[in-house]
Length: 300
Image (cartoon, rainbow, N blue to C red; front, side, top):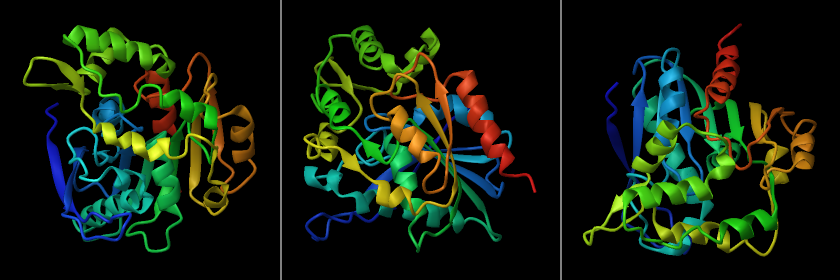
């Protein structure tokens, strides 16, 4: 199946209120473009939309699937000012612009589901409670993220995110990705290779690095000295929510996951043994879990 990258020009809200030039966000579009049941997939902090290729290929049998490169990642534009990566209304603005763009392509109402890994799940959670969202979120899938993010996990991530490390060969970069992404769980060699191919950026000097703006690290380093508490958002959530948790995760604790079952939307939580942060939704078991939850939403 041939994958094309589409682009959308969107405004750039700024933390200091200045008018910034608009930026482009990139996305892949899977399945029947006339299918009124749409699934938006959004990746984690430094990842990109191609992580969803395995999931999207399966979901495309039943849904139209849009997988987005968040600004500063993958094929999307980088922001000029680092502090704007820590301005969460920008992420909501980008998402709302995409939803409005998709909605405008239909003459009838559409059903919208959201699948988010880590950061992508947080964007979906906050977006779902906005009163002026172009299309309401019907179902929400969150991979290994919740309304309380421990300081210790943020500190661990700060050790490698935004370092702009260069590698002398593609294979060296792939080995590094396998090392730092080991908590994703057991992946096949083909899946590791797929992840690396779409993570790499080759420089003019022949070295290799990551395809994301190192400045995105600002979006969590500002919070590294304390827990991030988003329970006030979670308690407003009403969309039916399914949470996949890596049983060894340091980002979504078992205690927080248990509380998510009884607060807010009262999520369904599945623990995945042998996985940390975060289930990357390439494994066939994880794909089947997500697909089953989303398909259930189409039943009367």
